[in-house]
Image (cartoon, rainbow over all chains, first blue to last red; front, side, top):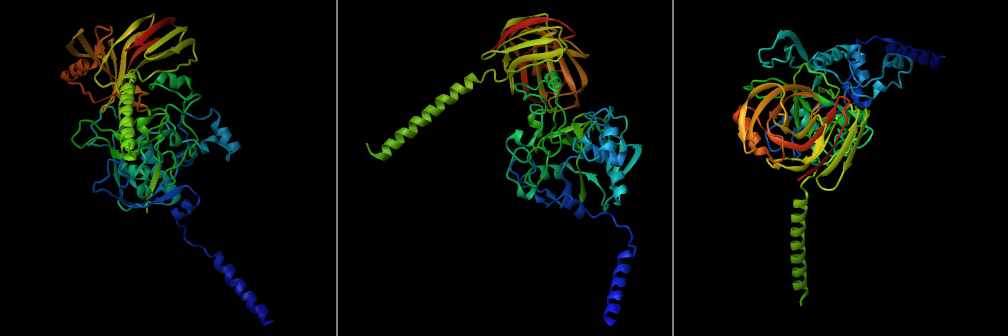
Length: 301
Length: 195
């Protein structure tokens, strides 16, 4: 009898503690790591001898980076729409009727401007319980000297916020070039571009040769590819080289330039192979949208 | 003969052989870019022949471009023999980076910037802004159109210098080809050898 009482009491205590409500806490990034979507990048100075930052006093702090480019599905879940060009006409029906097989689960989002991306970061942060990293003000930014940018939003950083954000281009190059585990590759994960990158020559029906040619690319059905289908780099990151180009935080130009564009890194399915080099700096006007332009997100540790 | 001496002779022979083969490869690397073509609209029959030689014929064509040339072009003189009939464009075409520029030497297009002299006469430079596909992906870039003598013997150094004198930026060279373009449902042919 006494043993039964002790058992019942123990059981009650256990049940009660399990039922007690805890305040909602944001999903820890460790869980995201465990679900295989994020990787912790150990910071430090640049190890890759091909990097433009090699030998310079630039130190990167630890940060969590998406293993893959942001997918159409991840975009839809936050923004409620799919702006991408490379999607099926009936994508909404496909997604609703067979969500696990939906192609947008594995295709990178594209046709997103830099402004769309900072908005996405903030909205995703709010959705997942993190503090938004950006302050976005529609007020025209006096530092933006690009007359072709019809938005010129003023975007600043909330220091100490733990929300999602774009990588700085130094962080991007650090991660792409292999971080502390770098093997000095030219492209992210290899010296052979075809091992790691989808770019103009290999992203269509036939392998294209000769000089880059937009008309042949069009007739060859070149397009974005499923994420993670090429070899990863030293840190386990996929498609840093190729597939879609990735918006970064930084202005491309020096402060005294008469133009203002934002940095794009990594090259994409459309451009030539030199754009896939980890050290290559691309750029575009911040309000621009292209079918080869998307993003990757990160968060501070 | 001692082993040491034999080894020295072999090494010397190999070194000479490598130097000779390097020279051969360099001079034969002349036209190092060619192109294969297939088209969805109309018919384009492109033949990639030896060296700098190519032939192309087309009918009811949607849009195509083909040609041969160099990458990087450097400041070389583009010269060729042969001809094209009914092409929408037949002439020198190329790209620069830092900043990104697409150029045609043999047509007008855009706002007139000014004129400059070359060994093949005076050219008028037009510049326009393009947003669309480029060697760096979709982006916004300048297009330089230099209108003047389209014939063989285009000295790129003269054109690059002319553009700089007109205040236009000229960065690093990328590819430059002698190109044949057709569009708008046309039919035609070309037989060209790039030197």
